Length: 240
Image (cartoon, rainbow, N blue to C red; front, side, top):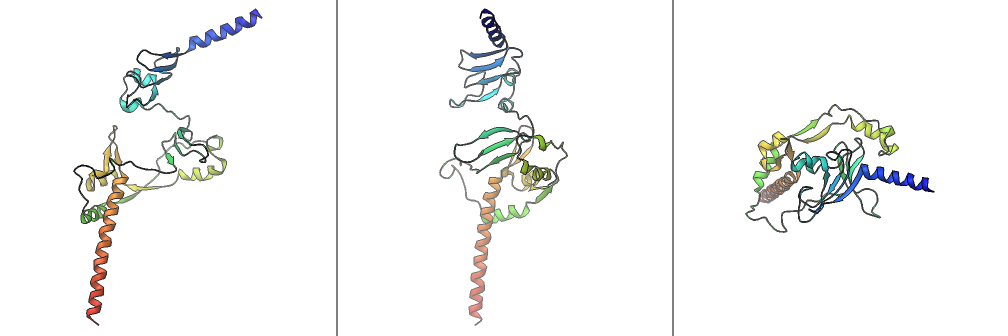
């Protein structure tokens, strides 16, 4: 019996030496190993020195990222996928079917629906209506492009537990597919309000703004069609 208790005590001591949970005086909680506390572990906020404090919300990030004085962008990058088709972020709800939102390790994001919250319930202060002719002019100068697939190492999907067997063939085919999209540089010249630049100096397209302009362009074209129809009907009656 003494031998068993001694073995258990040694095992618990070994665990305590290699891992620890700490509640710090500034309110943060850290889960980490003692083997390498600068790169391994998780920190839970909110608290200075752990993560960004925003209205009492809890944020996660790797301890090592903060210790290396990471930027706000890097500091929020606490999810790492084990392979291109493992999910690194999942949102689900009981009895609502499968995963409702997830991000693959290759960066692809999938969701059941997508909604964008407006700045406020009414018109933003100082807002102005979009001129229909301006909308048509912008849309007519935009160009859509096909983009060839980038060269990449194709993962072994046959042995990937995150991929359903019946989806493997179609997913392999996806690696050869072109994509169709607007050009960030073209859009920046024509409609700069719909372009944002990220911290790596990449042009990012705000498709919501593009859709808004499309709505106004269609409305303007419909107005012109109605005017032409009315004029033709009037001209036809005059010729009777």
